Image 1: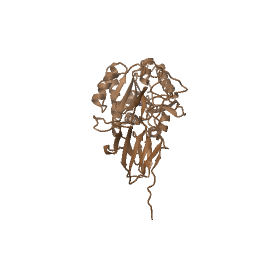
Image 2 (image 1 turned 90 degrees about the horizontal axis):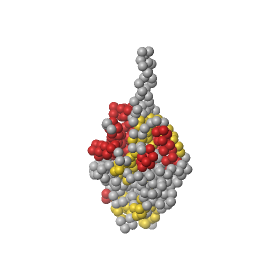
Image 3 (image 1 turned 45 degrees about the vertical axis):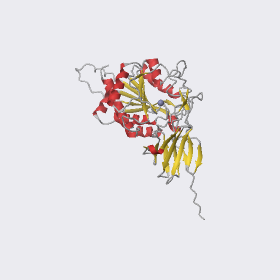
Image 4 (image 1 turned 45 degrees about the horizontal axis):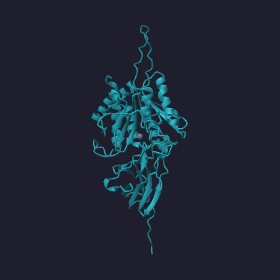
Length: 407
Ligand SMILES: [Zn+2]
């Protein structure tokens, strides 16, 4: 008698950004997949919002995967979980094209809690992730594509805990070559001061959708439209494409390799523990100390449900919020611009975000923007790559408009 045995499914996360903890087999086609999560330097604030793995051997079968071990805490509040009944995983059969799992494939098991995925597998290799992955290879590919663009300059401002380079990109047209002066002319008039915009991405490594926005913004700025040409002539753009390259490599969540949250600690920078913050702060302050200005700073983030703009109590913030709300796909979950508190945790050092720290120490108009990954009613769907791309161009244009208006 020939006995046909279904081969066991196998699970893999040994690629850049991959993240999966313990696997438990419940049945031939039913597995429990623990989300690894990450905790801080004091083993607090565990967040389990990143999973990215491959399942092999599922073709032709209906498989059930329970994403478990979701509970954690946020700003010392226990019992929170970033993965909820309203989050929808992405799936791919080639690691390039990603779609959301359909509603019918996702079930919330509240008692545990767990997110149960029921997948009719059409291919032998399935990649599953919380968001469309965007890792160091994508950033390197973008830099390579535009390496010869005259307006893009790349520098390395330091190294991460694991010695990965920390990049700072500058987008600005190089100054025109000096023209020979006719004998009668006066000394050349001074160049007008160009407003400088500083942008920071991936302080938290799980927030891959923010990088898609960043890539789109860079592509728009380096593009051929008359608006983009004016934007790189009239403004200086300084971009940190990856604040935590180690996290992008390892599939981290929100802490560097020493456990420090790179969007806290801006009031308590320990260069040996958080070389990323030290290098970014040094780049910003040496820019200021050389007589330049930072006219706007933004750190872009993702959350599950919230979408908002937060910053100091300045009219610039109110005006920017209105531009984004009325002229872009930004769909705020808070009715108005949010004035940030001075810290995230009163009375405790090491709890200022980058925006709080830069405003506190140097009065830089520094903002934090969150964009949701859950259903966006303005888009009429769960945001996909195309939506993030659209917003990147909108974001660049909103900044140009904001800083071009009389202040
Ligand atoms: Zn974040």
